[in-house]
Image 1 (cartoon, helix red, strand yellow):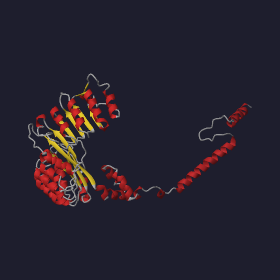
Image 2 (cartoon, helix red, strand yellow; image 1 turned 60 degrees about the horizontal axis):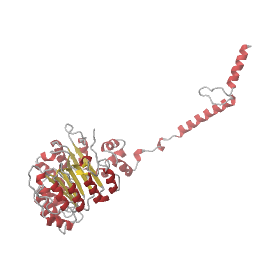
Image 3 (spheres, rainbow, N blue to C red; image 1 turned 90 degrees about the vertical axis):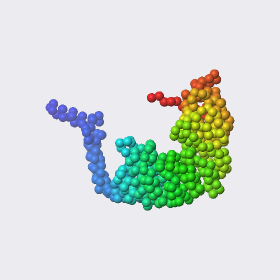
Image 4 (cartoon, rainbow, N blue to C red; image 1 turned 180 degrees about the vertical axis):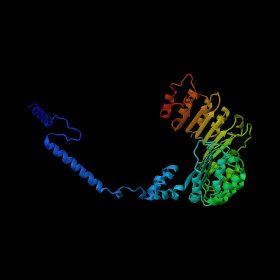
Length: 454
């Protein structure tokens, strides 16, 4: 009797709506709910079977069938090492890896693991480039560390580019001595290979190299109609006659960068001739190798001829001189537009800048000393009506004079980089409130630069 009652209670508990279904059970009550749950499980299994039966691997995307045009666009955004890994995916991607369009621009990084932390271009890859893609190369640069081995490797590659027609070539020494330690004949021989075979060279950057006058004549003989940019600062074997030969023959030259000892009145007159195009940029590095070095003077008439011929050209001058070596400079009007003083410059020289540089657009003074530059800045603001950028480092300017300078220049000062240590508080302005006054005249929020503290 008791057993029957217990079985009845268990049956009622199972049929109760509040009972908790076990794992894998269907929610609901009664036998109808169980039938529904079974049907749902059966239908779901059938759908999965149908999906598996209808699956066809051919319906999925085949990455190996991407058009070559799309692969080219993708590969152009990949670093060289990733591009090499991607070329191993399939035959189509390997073919895309060797497309000529991907090898028109290349930078050889030549470093020695013992002396440099930078990664070098793998030797096997260099061999492959020389073998399969040398005739595709057009825009080539060499980034070389200070070791002689890396410079020699660059020369070896240059000497093998006999089937290429380069448009730009750059030899970049990340640290001295690099190319200057090579035998001159070895370097000239390798460079001549490029000069002779290119025929359409438009941009050449060969700073800090042993290039000489005869090699420049080879350059001119083969590329005079196409050369537009020539950068050759710190090339001690080139004479003023050598650079004059380039200016006489390369009438399309638009940008030129060289050391001051190569600059001459004859060169400026050649660049100002009627058959020469308008020069756009002329960069002159005025560097003192030894204290007390003597520098020649350029005539005012030569500069005037240059301005008449190319009225919009930019004259950029970098000065790395000692204070007693500025004698020949800024005595007459100079059409300089961008002026940088890398070493200490005297108050007298800066005063002459305000009187002789009416085209000045940018001025950077890294160091001056402890004598305030108040009068010099005011004079520059008065006379240099195009000045739009200025940077002051280790020098001193009173807060009042600086505010007056900014007020005179106004909103044309697009770049104003002044170290906080430069500004000397006075009776009118202190460091806490000068930025408000300067911001008002600039029309934007401005704060002096601060030296970071670690």
